[in-house]
Image (cartoon, rainbow, N blue to C red; front, side, top):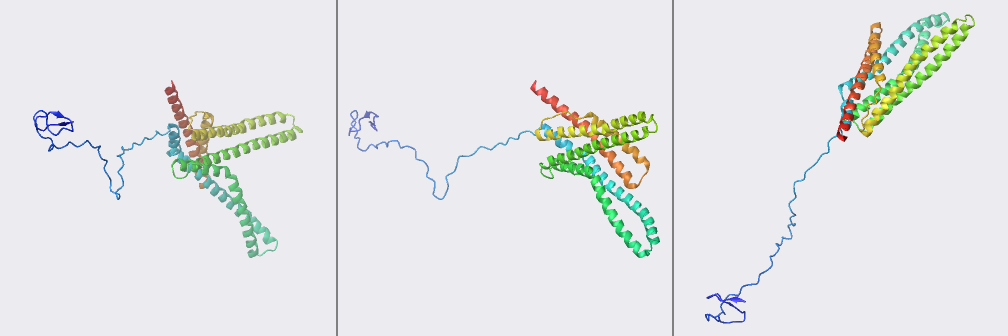
Length: 327
């Protein structure tokens, strides 16, 4: 169909004239058929532009409150003070032991020198022999001191690993190594305490049996002594056992992020009392290294006791918060 340009009548495409007004239709511009819209052609040198992307939004999961609390506690000034004091106690114990060894060696050397001179040795020969004996004695004493301080050294290294790991200074995997070292030290102390109790009881029985041959009343006194040893040393064994259990609970919390308030009150109280005892021990006015060692020991014990009470309270608060959310 096409339209007459003059009168507007609709006509067939084959018509040459308008049937109404007679206008020739040969000069009427044929209306082009509608064409589909063409897609733009991009130049070959330019890559096709992708559709604009919406701004990406980043969502950050909130930090675990339990692990965050453990991190805060392990990097607190209280924990750092206990760690530094533990290291200082080890150092001053070694210095005090070596100072005592030096004094003992000097006294023994004086008598040995007199004996050697009486035996016909010259002063130079006696001096050379004493130097060799002194070096050997000093080396053996240092080795014995380090062996005796092994549990305290393990605790110091373990505490530093825990602190540095939680502070982000070293790999967090070393935190478990720190807990392991502290637990190994506690196990060693526990084994020594049990062995000491057994040896003390055996000696008490032997002494009582020997004394009973001369006086029957010695049996009662021996039994009292054995009971006192059992109580006193048993408390030490209980302390190490409870400490080991508490360390296990804290290590599990740090690994699983499950809060637990099963912290031994007995350990905290005894640790605080040990700190007070160390302060009183400083009044003995011993050598400077001994006094400084007692001071560091007091700081360690008191800080550890306060740390345990604070840790237990924070864990209880987290557990109460979780319970409130589930209700």
